[in-house]
Length: 127
Image 1 (cartoon, one colour):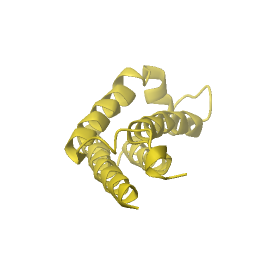
Image 2: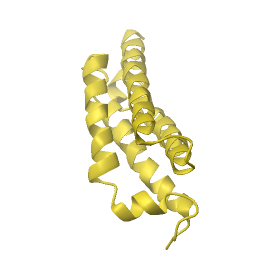
Image 3: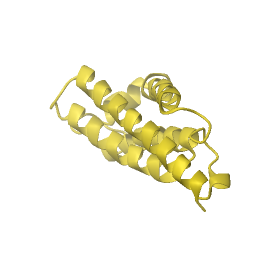
């Protein structure tokens, strides 16, 4: 399933920097354009909730995982993003750090995913 022809994302045709820039743009779409004010509040434990906070956080992080999987063409990078994004946002909600560090951590993950995707695509092309 992970043959070069199966990569539907952009990892096989872009440099790591180009893919990082697309992932960063996708991140800001996911964190600001696609995240409602309600989701931003209710994904944090200890707030008033119409649904359990964990559902909101899982849904929000899932959007980011989907964007990473879509852009890279590698589902497992999307799953990794889903998990790590949820952990980073949980830390921000718990008050361990503020928005600036939160966003920095998210973008560092996007850098890791971009260069991982390009590396994986190159290895698959050689096999």
